[in-house]
Image (cartoon, rainbow, N blue to C red):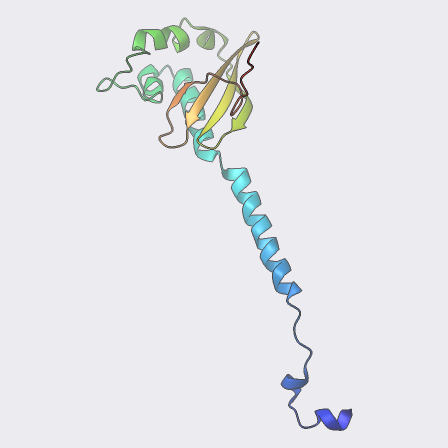
Length: 151
């Protein structure tokens, strides 16, 4: 057998490389990239809600109201500034406790649902749209709720 291989160069007689090394390397890179994406996917929405809380603590209500997508130039018809101040202003439960904490969050495909603990057992569930980062009150506590039909 040794005589047979003498005609070939050492690179030609080497065993073929296993493709499994490459498959495992690509799989490892995909897992790491997926983990990084999973950890950072809600970063922009969380920073928006943290900025909203900072605006409330600094009593910068116009800026906090703008995070709801409502400005002087484009006021929200269904959520006027006086109603916003009633919910979030200096006389609201959020201002009285002064200790707003982020609690439960649900990452949805087009939004993030974030529950805030206001203190005294009060909670409010907000939704942050991924497309424009506007904040609003969430009608649900989870993504894609299943509706119960009685009957």
